[in-house]
Amino acid sequence: MKLPRRRFLHLAAGAAVLPVVSRIAGAQTYPSRPITVIVPYPAGGGADSVFRVIAERMRSFLGQPIVIENVAGGSGSIGTGRVARAVPDGYTLGIGNWSTHVGNGAMYALPYNVLTDFDPVALHQVFYLILVAKKALPANNLKELIAWLKANPDKAFLGTPGVGSQGHLAGTLFQSITGTRFQHVPYRSVSLAMQDLIAGQIDLIFADPSGVAPVRAGSVKAFAVTAGHRLPAVPDIPTAEEAGLSGLLLANWNGIFAPRGTPKDIIGKLNGAVTSTLADPSVVQKLTDLGSEIPPREQRTPDAVAALQKAEIEKWWPIIKAANIKGE
Image 1 (cartoon, rainbow, N blue to C red):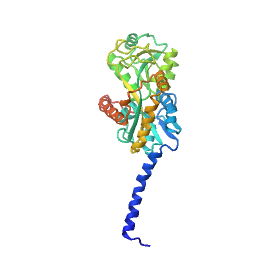
Image 2: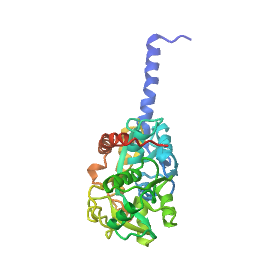
Image 3: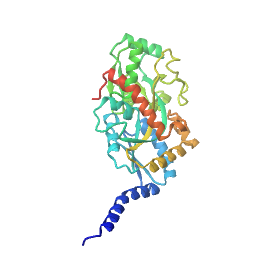
Image 4: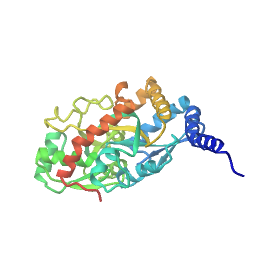
């Protein structure tokens, strides 16, 4: 049967509109099923522990379960790649930070682009690193540690969550500032490195918030934080500046990212759920206890996260490439 030309064009136009209408309807009813959030590190690490606190409260604002999937490996690039390849419908999201969305782009030949293959959703955490050592190390403050490292070049082992991670760069910066030398031991996560530090298998770590509990328990020695101020979670630990070392300043962050092309209405709903979650005093207290700081509201928007990521790339990529740091 042949259709009149006008009728054919009318049907064709209607068919073309259907996907758009479907996306709009999907955004309006979102979420209608559980949301999977990929954490690109093993369970129990800093990024994982912090997001589990947030996810527990976000569920009540979104009305759907949040399923956390730990996909470790490749300094976070394996799990992050899963997010990049996911359908951009808001049902698969990922946790991203400096390593996954800044550092890895300069060090690995990735099958995705850290800047153009994701849509930022929200920033939920800013944190700093804590320089810690095994209890048996014969130093009780930062000056004594530096003196011991100088007297024992290349004998100490620094554990990090991978080549090019911020813990690795912190160690490189520390050596440059102090004139010390020690060996690098990459792990799949800082929590695994911490286990070996407590067991005395390695000597040093620049720990993320997952290191707060061992510090409080006295399982490790803490020498300094890489912030310009003392951290509320561990107020007894001095800043590097206070401990006599200038220039050791490093900040990290965690946020939520979606695959590029996720509808803006969905990103808006997710950002609103994060904002509401971080307005809950009980959540803020839990995150503070884990060593986190909550970024100001204006820094949590998708546009602000995109600007932060771009600025970090412009700052760090030349440094990483000049140092010839490459992923394994």
